[in-house]
Length: 253
Figure (spheres, rainbow, N blue to C red):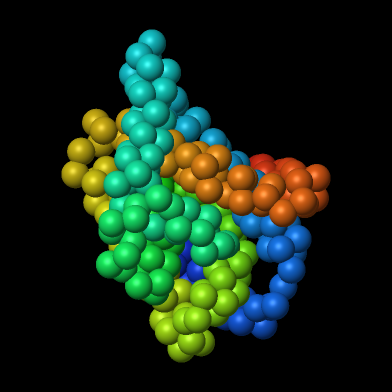
């Protein structure tokens, strides 16, 4: 339990660390943001596959393992998709574009929209980190948690400039960044306790967590990094992040 708590604090703290760095690079170009966010996407992609989807198959029940894993991945993605459609939020995590929720968004100020947007993005990551501890394989759990923490640093960096640009002052911007870190701490503990209650749901829970992360990568991160003319650099940055996590997993054994 102590390791889980330290992991939760580490995952959440990485976002806050990234936000602090973000204040130093608040005038960074779109190209810079796209490169580091793509790197984060690559890290997250590897962590999803290595630490969640593959362990789901390994802990499954014989011939039905692949079916449970596939269903879990799609359920996770579908869940985030439903939240994405129902809750008003900022679709692009490095921009201020409002989605088409005209009746609801009029009632919400920009600060609340940012909080909702980042929370929707970060909660599944926290849950994934917590669920990964249910396997009993500390190396896999550290791979997932380490990957999420590593990608949270550049992610924390790139959310600062849009908030400042939208008129939110520095103090409130930092408080929001801290709040997003707390969301991930909560998500990690939630995921851990969910699989601790019943290990029977572990294969599905792992796949579900992997599906949420894969959806965020595909729906939020990659489109954003390819929207400003830096597609090639963003693609290579994603590959670097992915390969770095592969090496990290091998080193952990």
